[in-house]
Length: 132
Image 1: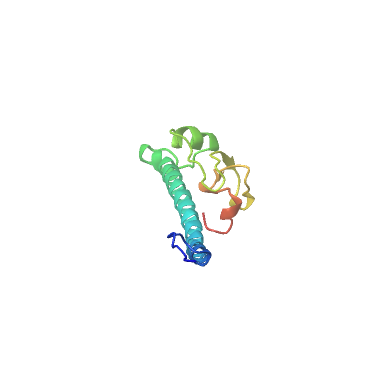
Image 2: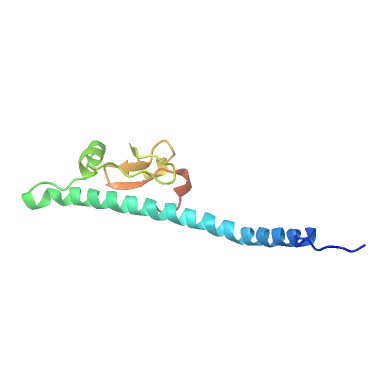
């Protein structure tokens, strides 16, 4: 009896290929997760930068004309400072702004704004202690 070579892969070759792919996936998946977190962090910081810039501009708007420097109210922030809309918080996908202190953050809104101090922060639970 003669054996003919059909040119297929043996079970051992397939197992080795699967193991190699699993090792590659083990190195790749954490990197993808890190890149996703970096993108969220960058998007949140950029949104805060835009809103803080608008708040600062509002604050000094009245000074050259003899007016008093003041921070916008929550309503003014949403309607006048950010006329094109409040950006979405990438951590909880909300674009609402709640009035309060930074310590009162929770996921009920996208952002927390203190109209007395002009401070605005992310309201997402994942950003607690992250400085934004």
